[in-house]
Length: 378
Image (cartoon, rainbow, N blue to C red; front, top):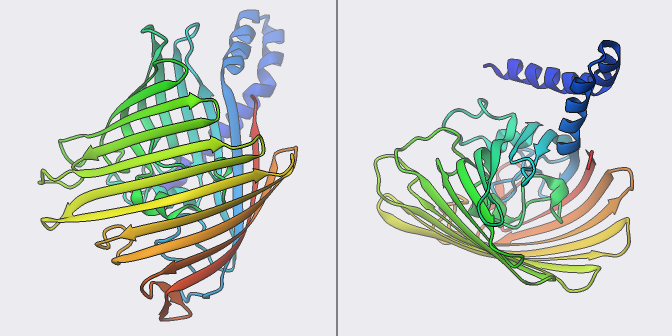
């Protein structure tokens, strides 16, 4: 299916959904189809419909000749440009003991999806507009074993693809370089009790909707919540990523969040990765520290600091130690509008950041204004 056809299909889907919401009750009254109306309403009682529009203006004080930042940034890459980032329409039904089937479908459009799917071996455009699409079933095992099959975002990292769910507008070095974006496969999650949850995955690999090798990649995760204010998650991913090799890529991802006060939250993320390239072992690791101070209902301040060691240049294309500091001011309107003003300073131990037309600098400063609108029926 061509990209234009897929975009058209998404548009028709959105219009059909909107039209159905308006027309179904009237149709049921005209036809006397009370059962049809009840089923329709029951579907939307159980299903959450949500979405958002995300855009930004970014200015890079290095004024790069390419008008874009380098591999240290993920999505907010454009310089001195008003840019659309991501638009999403999402439907989700969470399985329960009373209704064990479920699903999630995230329809996405924007440059973010080009970046997320750029390395997909099936082609960057085939599944580009499907952010997530999976079926769910809650098995009658203990407290409920949930099994999902399809395409879903990765379990690794503190930050996520959707800006609205992060504390800062730009993504961290760890999110950009140390971990995958998404997977295609099967996952099982189980809450042992109110303090411990476990999960296991079998997937095609890193950012693969279609398998390129016979062997699979495995993910294991344990989440503990010893007290209400503290949550810690350890995730491991391992498996071969290149055909005709037995070498595995390993990543250990540790995330912890702590609510120090009702207004101040802290978080930390550590990643360690290892692989082989041309028979030689390559490593990367980094740590990120976060804080968010919710001053009141409409304003929050969120600083972030990171250190990332790409020892062999495997993830950033240059062997270096890179750091960044970000400060984000968030302004929230009660009707779903969100604005973020952000300053970020990146610095490396080598000249890594493009400056002007063809020079390189060991540092980079950027300023970003992000604007979002989000809605949800629940």
